[in-house]
Image (cartoon, rainbow, N blue to C red; front, side, top):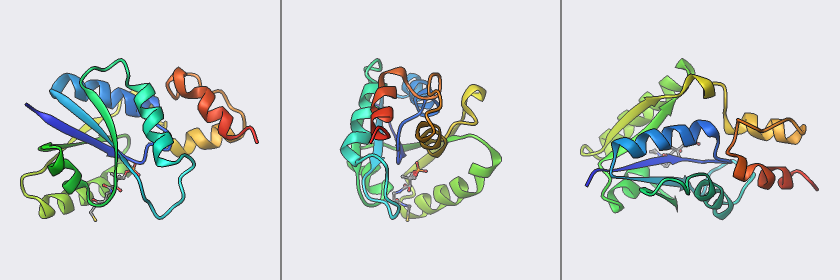
Length: 159
Ligand code: PNS
């Protein structure tokens, strides 16, 4: 069984993320979306909210599950018997950081492969931080995040 993990903060999940997950789910038998629980910067959504939104966004994909994790990504991958870490690349700006992370993860676990998928050009300009800024200023989120999570994001900024 070919298992991959797709890690991130997912604060919140976007259509760019979902596109990568859909494509990875066609290549791997199982894809585990790993939502990083603790980060230095305070996320807008709690870990359980981010898991819930990612679950809603991927409920049409049978071989995809969502879990939160803490600590090292290579440990999370090992626990789930995933030999592959999937990462999406949007622009060259993403490359340097991702390249460094991939090399670091490889040095931590030589069995662990990072595979990069190019973002769909439709979504190359989308990021979770852009989504939050748009939502804060009441911009239209249609086509940018999955329609089933739009209301949850709007609700965050209602008060
Ligand atoms: O969506 P993001 O914030 O770009 O995702 C970053 C993520 C979760 C992939 C990265 O921060 C990560 O892998 N964190 C887990 C800790 C870890 O293994 N760090 C690398 C070795 S120090």
